Image 1 (cartoon, rainbow, N blue to C red):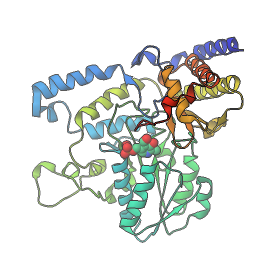
Image 2: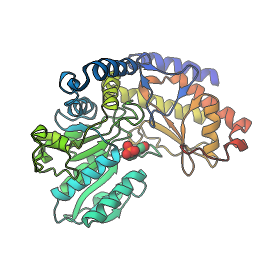
Image 3: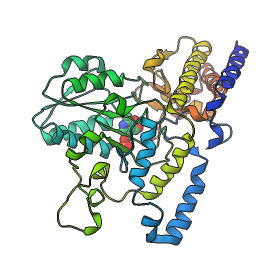
Length: 409
Ligand SMILES: Cc1ncc(COP(=O)(O)O)c(C=O)c1O
């Protein structure tokens, strides 16, 4: 039975050889990394790029680097590079700050774009930062928060709704929402569609422009592989940019920042969404990391990812019969992860890691196996599924060592 899986993995790896980008990454030997949906792996180009930025730019050219090495323009330039991966034409994506800050900024911009509307609609199980920021902004601008399951949302929309705020892919289950349909329903009601792309940017085609999304945010450190603490991105559709009010009107978003004017006047275009000095080292690491996608479309990455997640699920089904999957079976409804429910999920994640298979735990009972397609193979996934079977048959997941949880799970 297991030989079958090895044979099938080899066939699938051959069939998908064109999108095997492992040589573009530096991964430790003996590790199967299924946590690229939390912290992407290190792209091979990044250490040298950062070395150059630190030694040649910062070290030698010092302050001149802002002009000479394009530091000033980096938020928009890297934004355009991300735009290519999320279907945004140039001039609509800016990079800097965290997803939380970008979401806060986007929702305050909604309040200015939809004066008079008094409701914000979101999902009850969204990522905590999204729920906290929605609640926080709602309290500040006087909105009522309505929680609803995504499939119920179209039925709830009317002219009183300012925005619908959703995650494209659920961080726990990996459920992929129907962004085109939900965006269309939102806009038909006159509301703005605000999407969190943390778990889809770089993994799933998003096509922001094509589907008429209004505002979007996402992080740089998951499937975009920008590194720990990489800055986030914000998308503002060009049709909204003239009326985009920046809740944090910092000097980098000023029309003439070096005039040092007394009053704030927002820059034209996406630069208006800039705030203050960006974390240049992280921003330029992210820029170098994006080169790992050179010559490959997100559609091709998605095709590989679907094959990998389908195969991982099949392997687990075969080797660990009765597994309770939290992630959808249907390709069209699944992002780039396979999530398994188990009452001892935390111990399973720790025991797998001890065997070199790195995933993560999400409370209360989810083993999250992220599948970053560019650097994983079908053969890796057979090994991961076998490790899961071994852990469960030997009872390694019940080791008392796992009773106390780490700060980061
Ligand atoms: C859906 C989603 N939104 C936001 C965040 C994080 O936001 P921040 O970059 O502000 O930490 C995460 C992090 O895992 C996430 O999964």
